[in-house]
Image 1 (cartoon, rainbow, N blue to C red):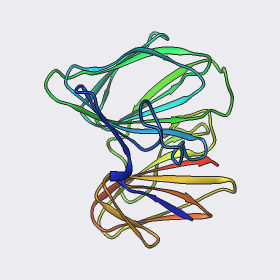
Image 2 (cartoon, one colour):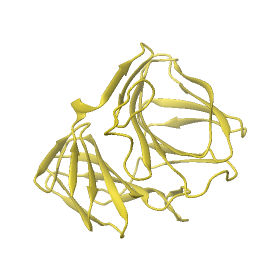
Image 3 (tube, one colour):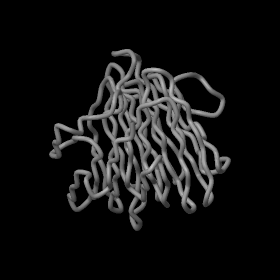
Image 4 (tube, rainbow, N blue to C red):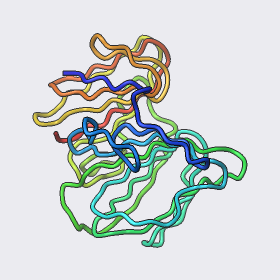
Length: 231
């Protein structure tokens, strides 16, 4: 089954320093029909103004994945991590028993565009941890693993089953992803245009999929993020 989530149906907010779109209920946006998809709880499409950002705040018991699509993001946290996340890099924070962190646009001149995604963890109150990695140069026309629920030489590791996969597709290419029993996939179009079954999706569109197999077909050069989670 494919449940289409059109870009224009997302929640929206503009705070001046932050222009954001919410795929699921978050902050002042509440839609009882969009409280998450399985263990996927949040997918925010954020554009942060130069020099602005999220001040120090706390989280616990959540896997927080950040993909920087354009620009640079500066990260600091209570674990002592401090670094810059660049275009094409991915950050994973396991908040576990509790952390405090801040995320600011590192540039004073250009906005930063990012996806912030929350997944509910398999276990609560684990020791918090952090990692980031560049995925700017990945093999095209594949579903490349960015984050997995198991150890891998190529991907970051989250404390939940499933994974995050990035597809950079040339025109008229297809990729397939089988879904284990009890899992679903949330496919988000970063750029371009794809088809899923009988549906055509453009930038900002998404689809929640349950079934045995996901097939993504690109109508033109496209990027899509596939998030597999337990339902």
